Length: 185
Image (cartoon, rainbow, N blue to C red; front, side, top):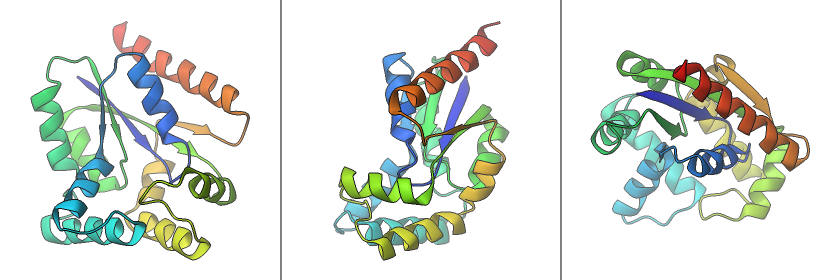
């Protein structure tokens, strides 16, 4: 099995590659779903502050690999016969190192400027999205504290999402096909 890890700051465009993977019948597992699930389990509403606090709490309680361990276990249980699985939301170098100990992993980083990301998040209006600049900056800093910057800088592939959306999708689709073809050879 090969994992295709997706990373990027909030609002960078990670969902685009998730949709492409699904269109290509590649299973997708979101690390953020684990955190959102735990947030709700604690009786908290989904908002940037509560989700962020839950992520920090889980890492303090279970260590820096707290989110990736249950994700990989789930992947092995549910998708053991799959050739590829996309894992979205890798945020720390510790998660990368853990995954690389257990599976073949290639990482795609999606990059967009803070201005572009803030505009997208404000428009997207998901429960745990930032709609104020202060909250957005706070969330970015929390992500950077998790070492997402290291994950992005060490990614196998980086796709910039500042251009027309159709061109961005075309680039992502070409990259996904390239990754799949390299394994099939």
